[in-house]
Length: 308
Image 1 (cartoon, rainbow, N blue to C red):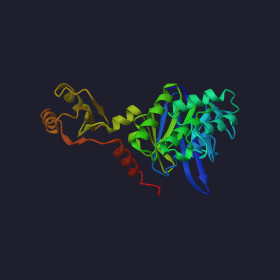
Image 2 (spheres, one colour):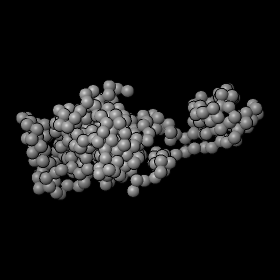
Image 3 (cartoon, rainbow, N blue to C red):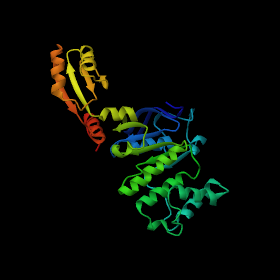
Image 4 (cartoon, one colour):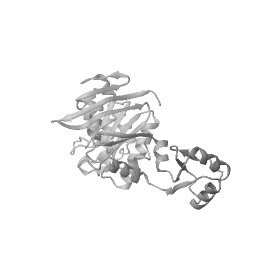
């Protein structure tokens, strides 16, 4: 993992006795795209607001850039935030919206900086159009530009593709990838794992205020990769047969009795026949194919379903 730029430990938030986030722990490395995946009401926005310094945790600790933070800590200024709906002035143009924010930041060379941001988010040709006439995708792009005014090291985006059409989703995705190429660390929340999987490098599944799983991109894709699950008396005895007689090299021993084989083109009957002829008792063999969304929903269901 790259140098940790954000670290949360035992982070908890309660509202009037109701726990929205419970003892959350994770680290985010510099330059990563960290995806928070969870259903609506899982606690994602609350967690992001605490990291951004918009609300204070009930207990636990947040470290930004290897420094513990408290209310109004200067390190929060290095974070750009778009949580929930972008706060835009509907009767102003995109340029005018960004100029007002730039003035509040005390930026001097505002014109060049604003025009650069408008080009980055694909709004350079809409300087005369008032925001009230923008599509949802255009408003999201302008909201991201507003979050970037202060040239942050970290960008936090809460459900940035929610409600967008396929073209809008594609535009936001490409923008996130371009920003990440500059070395920016990005945190994105979503309830759509399939879409998040196209950009994120690390994933945390949030359910009822808790992190129930944390995966790298490679680990997550491996969970959903086509495979054959084989249960035998002793996995260590079956593995040499798989390698030598079936020429299987892409496999993983899950437990003393279970092996996952990722050469899913093989026929179950052929595997069974070869193992049995070699004196291996096969208790079960199942071909497994699962989409990312199916995996996410199965994990949520195993934890007790939705909060609502």
